[in-house]
Length: 243
Image 1 (cartoon, rainbow, N blue to C red):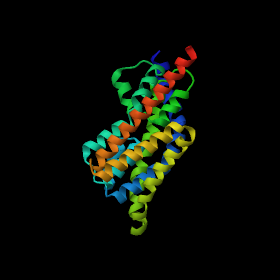
Image 2: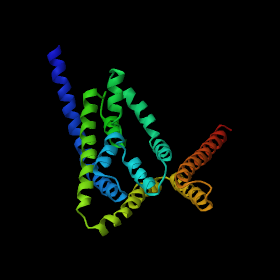
Image 3: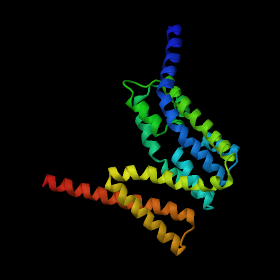
Image 4: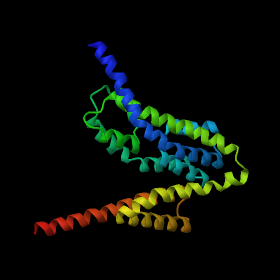
């Protein structure tokens, strides 16, 4: 019995690695760009790699660089990151039902590696997801992100100073690249983005709040308002159907 189990674990881990290779390849250009931008923001290679090691969340790390550039406080950065990553609660709860039973400590360990991409791979896998498979997928994606973040910083150091400074534009290009596809798929996202931008502009121009708190409050307010309108609209439509 023990021999069968020993053969099964490496097999599942190997399958996870094979499934995670595409994620690792996909992370390569994004992680390299993050490292380059971290260099221009003023982070050392050690700080860049440490952020990727401890955070492992692409969008949040990009946002953190933007907030650091604006001189935002630590608390605002942490709060903004929490809001951006709050969807991970739902993803983790969903995967918990699909993954095999295991000790809480084991599940907590690999849950750290859940991203949009690793979640998609695990969720689309047929049948139950084993612990070995999850560790395999995450080990590849995590390694790719951390290593290439550091590599991007090192490569950035060898670039001409003018080119390093111009790389800050890539940060905004990254946000646009993430936002536009979502806006094409949903008018709700369009209203959300427009409302958040409006609130942030008002708070910034009137100097009611600091830059960091302006971003945080604009995000929360726009999300609450759009969701309230959306929920009210669905309720009214449901009421008409019943009537």
